[in-house]
Structure formats: C-alpha cells, structure tokens
Image 1 (cartoon, helix red, strand yellow):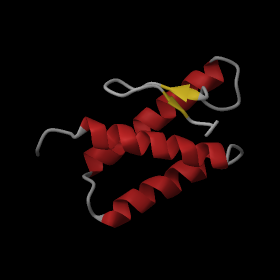
Image 2 (tube, helix red, strand yellow):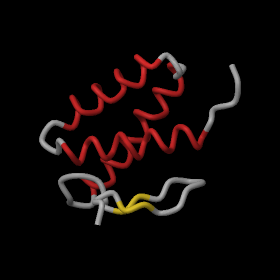
Image 3 (cartoon, helix red, strand yellow):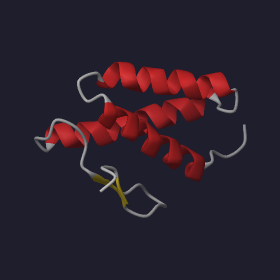
Image 4 (cartoon, helix red, strand yellow):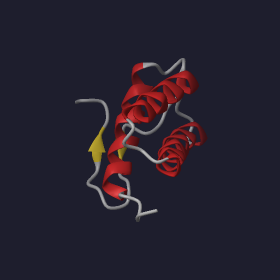
Length: 88
C-alpha cells in the first residue's frame, strides 16, 4: 500500500470533529456515520479510516480529560495550521 496521505487524513479528522460538534450528545453515532460516509466514497483504504477514527477519538478524549464535554474549540494537528472549529 502507498504511503498514507496525512493531509487527506487531517482534513477528514477536522470534518469528523465538526460533525461531532453538531451532535455532541451522540458522539459515537456521529463518528460511525461519518466513517460510513467516507467508506461509501470508495476512495479510502480501511487503514486510513482507522487512522481517521483514532484521531477523532484522541482529540475528543483530550476534551473529556480536560473537563469539557467535547474536544477543545481550536485544533492543531501535526502538519496543519491551528483551526477554530466553532466557526467563530
């Protein structure tokens, strides 16, 4: 398999987190629905989907461990600029 496209994965993590912010009371179904949508495009390897899922869960876990109900409002993934996820 070719090298993982970290830019593509980071972008998907960002979008997945945005979906989680839209449904904060239903995080797990939101993650699964998002991954199913990516899978349905046919342009994702399963290993990439696992990396995306792990990234989303890690960011959400950081928010829970820091006492918030969801992840921090600003996200910085390796190789990307900080991004405000609230739309503000």
